[in-house]
Amino acid sequence: MDHALNYRVLMVAPTSFFADYGCHVRILEEAQILQKLGHSVTIAAYHNGGPVDGLDIRRTLPIPWRQGYEVGSSRHKVAFDALLGLKLVELLARGRFDVIHAHLHEGALMGLVLGRLFRRPVLFDFQGSMTAEMLDHRFLRRDSPFHRLLTGLETWIDRRAPIILTSSSQAQRLLVEEFGCAPARVRTLLDAVNTDAFRPASSYPAAELAALRRSLGIPAGRRVIVYLGLLAEYQGTGLLLEALRHIVTQRQDVHLLLMGFPNEAVYRLRAEQLGVAEHVTFTGRVPYQQAPAYLALGDVAVSAKLSLTEGAGKLLNYMACALPTVSFDTPVAREYLGYDGLFATRGDPVSLAEQLARGLFPPADAPDAYAQMGLRLRQRAVQSFGWEKAGQQILDTYRELTGRAAPALAASVQPWPARSSSRR
Image (cartoon, rainbow, N blue to C red; front, side):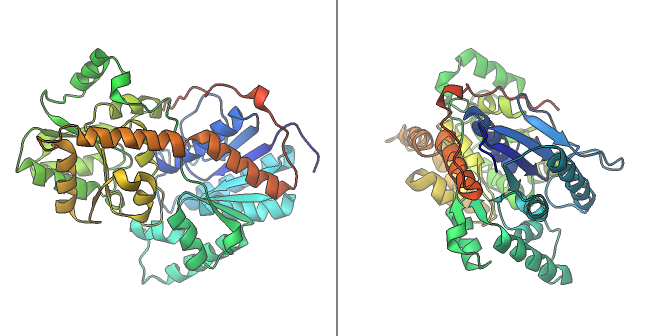
């Protein structure tokens, strides 16, 4: 392999990139930091998805019967993945790439097969167990005959990948202890956050936030819980609404700003059934570049995610915004929040309500206690979860895979590219 001036990366994104959530944000930020450090990135993704300024996204052919975004497990992904495989063959045949950076198990499978065919090294960016996600989404039953088959496929992919980057230490342990991966091939690359974009409410003009609050119909005098992400049972959306009901029975001065998709109609109905509809604002999809200002409206942030294998990047966004943060008590949440999180018993809406109330209504003798907690979380995000450090770790992995070092490119470092997600 010749010594180019930079790494030419083919990033495989088997999803409707870009769509303002979880794994998409990791793909986006990784691509942007690599470009900032002077390397070229081409992203291969499904036909459906929003554009991002400054990124080279190559899309598959469309599927006439499926025009919407693909979120989570779906039988339609078989067709999308087949088309993505063809797109990858086209790109590898025509272009010169140094490394295939594959996201998710579908991307890793395609990368391993085509990497062998085109003699290109493959990096697997692991963001959770494939079969565990299918179970979480209720797409697969544990007693189904397909469960063993898919677990076998997942194990094969995990063990064949030359190097795997995981989004948490918990995922690293999962791969080693449950899927039998060699420890030397599995490294943790924690999610990171752009702390210049995601910043405390105090950095915004008060009038700007007041206008945004009014536009969303949030009544004056209410303390605000913010959530940003997918709306789904495995994300704990139903449990979050139940927790809100418990709080509202005690006090009325609370409001939930529920930002995300899909299933908005389902959870609107759930809120009505629980009697909390007057205390919830559903925003639908919030473009990622607008998310910092929306989060700045919050007094406390929440993640009710139940999964034990997936990352929880939204926690870093909350931390960067200096928000006291409530989460179910999982190893991933502990890894991100450290000693300054408010942890509820996993799956328990009453415990979740208690922790939310703590953050919303601090004791009279310590009115700033949770605001100070939020500031410590902001400091932790700045010091430990910046993308510059993560970008260098990715480059070290490329260097190991390719057997060559990319030259220092400090002079070519550019400012963060502007985001655009017009269409998560």
